[in-house]
Amino acid sequence: MTMINNTKNTACKFTQIGHSEEFGTGIANVLEFNYQPQARNKLLAKAFKEIGKIEKYGSGIKRIYTICKDYGIIPPKFNIKQGSFEVVLYKEKRNVTDNVTDNVTENNILNIIATNNNITTSELAEKLKLTRRTIARYINKLKDKGVLKRIGPDKGGYWEIIK
Image (cartoon, rainbow, N blue to C red):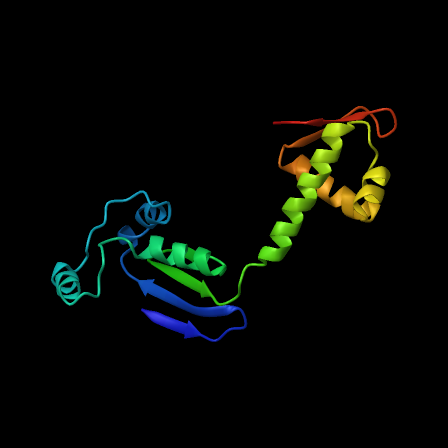
């Protein structure tokens, strides 16, 4: 196992070298939390369990994801390579404020459209005190998510909210 430390946004990288058959679909199942835990070195696992260094077999990756989520840190990235896998842990926090602001703005747009499906982007911009370009960006996000659809032309058309 190698560890690389101190890049700008990365706390550390761990690379595990092993036989190709140990990884591949096996690690993919682990990342989806769809696996049966299995110790590769049973004697070592038993020793760590007896001294209290292992809470539960096979719970480590899920705990790492949970801890990152709880602390607002970007979740780890697992890179599967031939004969090895790499775990990248980040020290950078997710930008929660931006996500919350985006969700609130998108919800505000949908609420206004729900009351007036003929509203224009210029009218939305005026009501929400945003630029027309910003409204267009949010509308494109909503369209990409499959939540909002424009029926007809810009002039004379209307918005349809898709549940």
